Amino acid sequence: QKEVEQNSGPLSVPEGAIASLNCTYSDRGSQSFFWYRQYSGKSPELIMSIYSNGDKEDGRFTAQLNKASQYVSLLIRDSQPSDSATYLCAVSDSGGSNYKLTFGKGTLLTVNP
Amino acid sequence: GAGVSQSPRYKVAKRGQDVALRCDPISGHVSLFWYQQALGQGPEFLTYFQNEAQLDKSGLPSDRFFAERPEGSVSTLKIQRTQQEDSAVYLCASSAVENQPQHFGDGTRLSIL
Image (cartoon, rainbow over all chains, first blue to last red; front, top):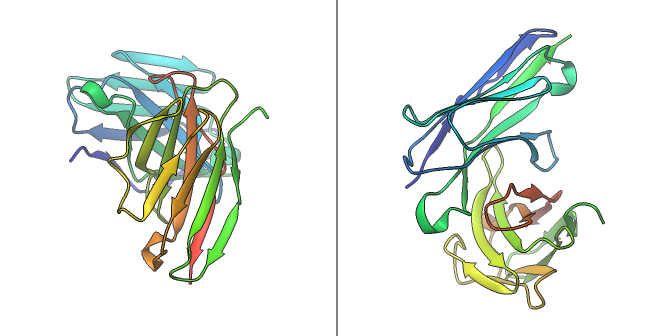
């Protein structure tokens, strides 16, 4: 059973701070990693994708991947109240079913004004 | 439209009734996925289509669940003889090709009384 683990939170940060969200996964052969943001009652929205080790930056968001440690993280700089949401980590399966995503349960982030 | 469209947004049914949920993917997207999301959980994979071919139905919980995509665009997820445990949000996602990021629709919230 492939697993993706996230701290459920809630993670509470003040406005303007850096929010750090972490995710570990069990499938050592996974190649694709995604962060989705989900507001309450809404659908998951793709924030970042990362495929190789290291950092990938997009605006205020930075995704970090370490395949050896089976660890992926998302940093949100200059956090805004509008960033308050659940953040889902998703990892592709290895091998022939690499289209299939396994999601963590999500981390609830609250940014306080 | 520009995004993945799902209907209905909300569906209430009595236990034992059959329901049909519709997904209209992003135009031109080859890959289509169905997920089930229980409250407080991440989405869980149900089934995958590449064009009209259902390549993976390993996540369907029982033989009461059936999905089709006869012309390679719109897909329908059908649940027969619904049970209370079928209550969840059903999400549809599409991607341009198999390993590209998946984009989600707003989901159908199904409640079985």
